[in-house]
Length: 326
Image 1 (cartoon, one colour):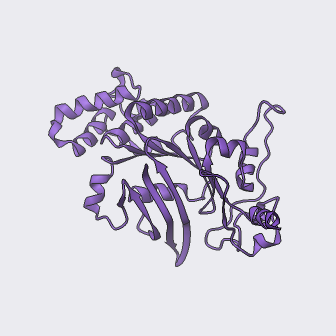
Image 2 (cartoon, rainbow, N blue to C red):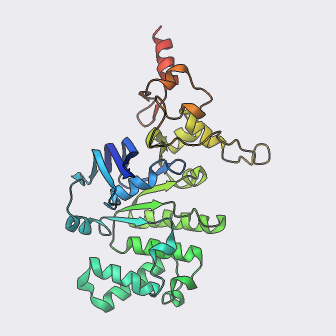
Image 3 (cartoon, helix red, strand yellow):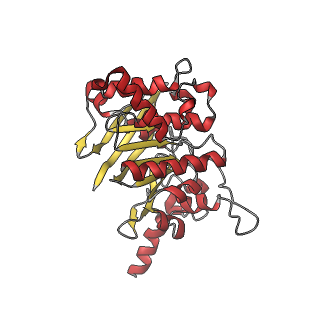
């Protein structure tokens, strides 16, 4: 069953009199109890989507089309009072900058307790402090460090504190926006293991946003690949890694060092992502695509379905289908 369903979602920003389409007709779902990876380069629209799911778009951002359904409920048009009951209680979010989500002048235990009290006022002061200790223990913070200030914690501990804050309202849906990007690989592995354990213990559904395909392979069940505000491919982890269809997905996989072949050699993607103020006509990846054809410069690609779980938008398969028809 789909816990979250996104249909033809479009999000625009207004800046200096210009309109920037940050998310363009995005459609995918997150099944209950699953972990879905949302991958792509910086500027592809991943964080904008996360903010829209939480009702946190900045003032110059707005949803201009489509819908977001959470547990079958339309989230567009909710009042701010309604959003306050959803944020934290139904949905939690782990932000990329852990230090930015923690108040530097308050002890971490007290910050978690304050958030707990917001969602469960009946617990009172003592009950919320007890609950904050439970949450910090749950994410692996030693008891003797609960009353420290954020600057007294390491980066990995601060990220665990951010996860504790996100779980303080007992949500069943967690959005993790690049939570391990700024951490070294040892700490990354510990945070990923923690998320796996929490997902199993609490029955969480997770949308994991990253640009690191290695993390996706380790953690996720399904993958949505975004490029220049659009979803260009979607499939299970096995399909994406073993049989990628879109040239961008293949290029992303080729840019990951493979230490089993050639001493960790990788191949970068030439060029840069396009401007979203004036994106290229046709397929947005065609200026960087090694398989680009003339039609790619003129017409938007159609979606091709390869299985019940894998689809991609690429003119290569329009041509293939035409050849098959002949």
